[in-house]
Image 1 (cartoon, rainbow, N blue to C red):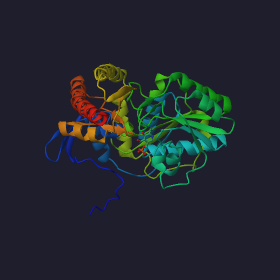
Image 2 (image 1 turned 30 degrees about the vertical axis):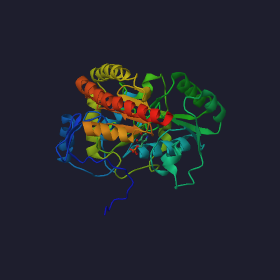
Image 3 (image 1 turned 90 degrees about the vertical axis):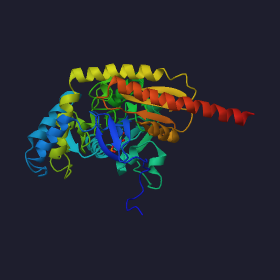
Length: 392
Ligand SMILES: Cc1ncc(COP(=O)(O)O)c(C=O)c1O
């Protein structure tokens, strides 16, 4: 009998060791990992510079609390501020916690409570982050939700125009919906959302938890769309696998997060901060991001070569964040991919989500796409055969 709550539906694989874009399981089978630990290991598994920074910190101190001066938190905050064009940072331990802090800050700064989010969005599992999430399956059995969230269809200008008004504290949005199926925001829509926020005195909060830290070829994905958010949230890739979250906001918000207003025992833990600094030092360099863009072009070219397969409805994404929407549920496809050595993610029922490490090689990208081709080609055949049998 397991002593774990059965909250996760786990795969058959148990890792033994990881490195770069690869994983070897307990049976000695090796896999190409296109999950990056769900968008976390953007530098691949166990990058050397992060390991060194963490080991150095482990030899100094592990935890002292936020009662002490912390110049490394200052360094990490400065790096986030410079990379985002924002000013102030609060460190949390996870994505949901970062969103929780952003929601609290938006309510306090505006004196309003209504927050507009989007259908199929995902913002985390704490109570406010769950309430913000626009997917019923995440909330099942936990109701009632916080009442101040309303959900409008994504990429729908008329819908947001209808919903927003002077009572809105904030709009919280992913510029690419990750868990919801890799839906890329339309630039015109995103700019209208920003304009409406300005018009009605609502804060624009961009959830960059999955899209940030170089994933799309820029430090943060909002930078593809000429946006000027009041707050962004980050986590996942920020610590390369060490738990950390961050809210990054404009200077005007600083007075509303004054001393004693918010806090966290572990937030900004020195070990995670050391990992975050080493991660950002590598990823925020222009040459590194240029390479991500180059690999992305190569990756999408390869993926688009699969478009003729009848099991594929659409290929979407940006940078090294891709979604293949299929005509059939992907759970068994993912298991078949694992059998031949590729680990990929689902996003919703019918989307294969690919989040390879940003350090992946072109040869590995090609190899991964070939494995997808192999499985989907077989599947196309079986699927068509099924249809034929049903028809006649
Ligand atoms: C866009 C987005 N927001 C928030 C979260 C929640 O982050 P965490 O699991 O670290 O709480 C996730 C996690 O998948 C996410 O993708």
